Length: 127
Image 1: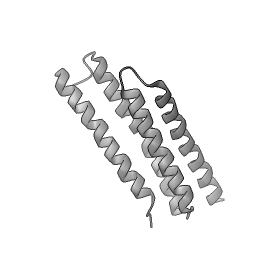
Image 2: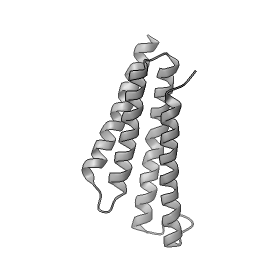
Image 3: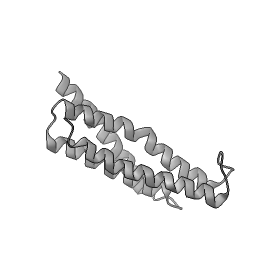
């Protein structure tokens, strides 16, 4: 049974909703219902949201699979915290105007670290 990865999935889902609301709010402010209308603010909001969607599900899947293979709680929490911090840092750093590049970079580094370590853990646990 999964007991740790659902916590991080829930926290990341809350961040997903916040990023979605940001896109919707920007669409409302710019009066754009379809596409980006050339709005730089809307493009930034949608790309921040899209980047989250591109990385988070795969990382969560790897963490959940590691938990199903009985990975230790410390490893699972470290993976979850690393992913959560990475996604928060990236969303905040990328979503700001001007960007906070160091946060964006730290966010991607943490996200890639969580994915890579989770992948290696899954291989080790499966073999």
